[in-house]
Image (cartoon, rainbow, N blue to C red; front, side, top):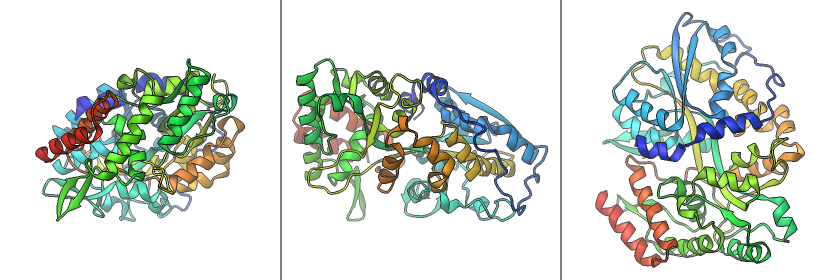
Amino acid sequence: MPRKLAALRDHSANFARNALICSTLLVGAVGTLSPTKADDLNWRQFEGTSIVWAYDIHPYADAVAAQLPEFEKLTGIKVTPELYPDDAYWNKLTIQLSTKSPSWDVVGTGIQPAWDLAPGQLLEPLDRYLNDPKLTASSYDYKDFFPALRNALTWKVKEGQIEPGGGQVWGIPHGFENIQLFYRKDILDKYGIKVPTTPPEMSASCEKLKASNPAITPLGVRGVRFWSSIHTAAISIAKSYGVHDFILKDGKLETGLDSPESIAFHKDYVDMIKKCAAPSFANDNWYQVVDGISSGRTAMAIDSNMFGFWNNVAGKPASGKIAFAPPLHAPNSKNFESNIWIWSLAMNAASQKKGAAWLFIQWATSKQVELNGAVAGKLVNSPRASTWSDKAWLEYAAKPEFNNFVDTFKSVQDRAALAFTPRVGFAEAMNAWAVAMQKMVNGADVKTTLTDLASGIRSSM
């Protein structure tokens, strides 16, 4: 897991620094207040404790770090942040937790890594903390988090495997990403191209754009031989075709990647990639996608919506030029689908300071701290519904340079959900899917390739 996860999140240190340099920082526009005005929780019950919070270098982490003095003043708890570049962080996270080291108390994790950590009892279930009125303020309002995020972080561990649909809470949403189509409005307007809604429409738009200006790459998407390239555009669009990575058949888990729906999706998607993506598709990860859209070398992209926001801030070369739309969907579908990646705060099961760790998690994911991070231009995808109805955030995010960011977020979030089947060993099968996608783009027969892919997955289950 560590090396694979590092590949997914590689180079975010550079991106984070660039994002922060170019962000419009509004710290102070919203006052940093205690998470609860009603003094129903003793925030100083662990006064004098010191804890360590570990996280990837990321604007979402900076949103919390900027407010740490307020937490320490409120609680008397000293927090030491340990923020690492991607490759170092994911490797170190696995080592720290798998060796049951108590040196980290609170960790940042994505949803897929947590699937591998929970069965070994390396993460602390959080239900008893959430449900304890002595540890959780009545104003915390756990149900304020978007339901799709809460559901994705709740599961049972049964016989060493993840079983979704209820169970224990393994992390608290801190930030997240939903998948959208974002595009250079200036380029599409110049060449009279309508925003496409399906892969065939995208293919036609790409051919029109290439005929008008061959120097512009029509569409940026991830294509690396790793599940990150499936996680954004591919799985979101595939879901609208009725494709499932795994299905239950006769009480047993079975892959759905060789289904008729999957064949139909892959024919359209592969055709779209051939007509729309850069020649470098097989080596493109999110940083190439973002660079293309921000520089204007690429007209459209399907990826995490926050990238479009951060490149729209005042003073950036692309400021005000990037607009947003839902992901593409199947031609015969009325609805689009959008996958999510969830940044969460979790507790190390080996921590010896769990009470203080929980107060920190609670504070860092509280309504006020989430709102402050959003208005500072860092935590632009707050997981709390209340942020998205707050005047301060909406006035900032609805500035003209952000175009239709807020309205598109709200419409996409109504249908955003985890598109993958939760399971230990998730990465192996999805990596194989990414390899198969490259083969099909390079000319391999779609049906044959998907049959071989499904056969390989079945043999490893």
